[in-house]
Length: 261
Image 1 (cartoon, rainbow, N blue to C red):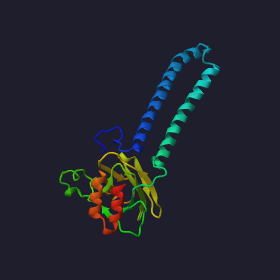
Image 2: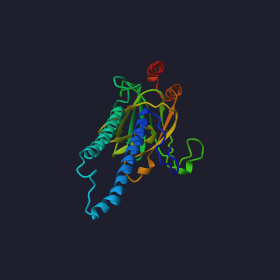
Image 3: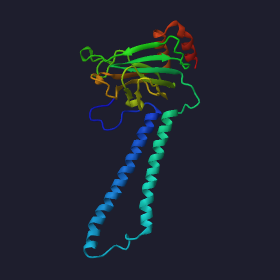
Image 4: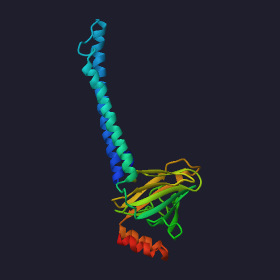
């Protein structure tokens, strides 16, 4: 999670966020370069051009220089092309996430409420008629925090975090039960709107285990700040044990097929 006086992004845990950080750093290099070059020539022209202008002279190397005009017209176009290509590449990779043609092993339906989250786990077939693991996730009040792991960050801890397996692809499906919310977890590079009557989805995987925090990023009412998100990423074997502990008997076949994959 973010630290005090942190100027950079949070550490990434998947390829999507890594690509976004790389694009940001590359764009900042181009921006600083352009500003430095423009600033240098601006100062140069102001310091020398004014003296030429006051004396009635014009530099023959600058005025009507076609090569210079082609250069300062082409170079910005090249920079814009590079920025556009990087942006489109990130948008495309965010959609397909390197899993085109493959079906995720797990589906998690995320529903926003005023003012808590609910999670429902389904298999890859998304059979809503079958039983599933589902639970609500509420903010832990500040008075109940005891300083231990998972109970120490004010306005960030929840009673039931979302639990996901590492190194496996899964689909998150977002919706809302009342007003518009936004599911935002910076380390995932994930910010998706939860809109009533509409389903948004995102397919990705994570490679690092740990506990990651997020917030509702859309003002949704008086207690908008009381909708934290906690995601716990554990190994696939540990996740199966957690899932079997909360799953119904009808899901035993899914757990066996999941462990086999």
